[in-house]
Image (cartoon, rainbow, N blue to C red; front, side):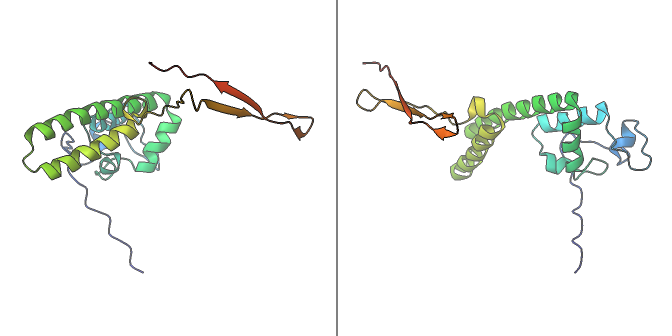
Length: 171
């Protein structure tokens, strides 16, 4: 069976390489199989993430680490993990701005709606606490919420205890 050819690295807006090797460009000397981790490289990765690039696309660039290496670095280096989380937040905020620009300049409204929907979905996954679906449990006077609690004591289940929660309504 023939091996699939590795895709040609893509150019990413904002990503420049004079020598074609991200490690050399920032002064990291590679010997053997080092991870290549450096603050400069992780800063560059975070910058490119923050301006809207996908990690999978960045990892296709010549001289950039594999995706699995980046995830390993995230587990191993708390400072990179914090910078990466902040870059993802910035990416999400940029997504909001992109939606506004798309809505304001669209000529093909069906395409614009699709682009905006994809960005909204992505935002809800990147920052679920801020942009995700809200889950609200509520009841009414006729059908209050009830929580059934069961405890284990002495190896046997005891009967459930019913706890009623009163719900205040605006009326």
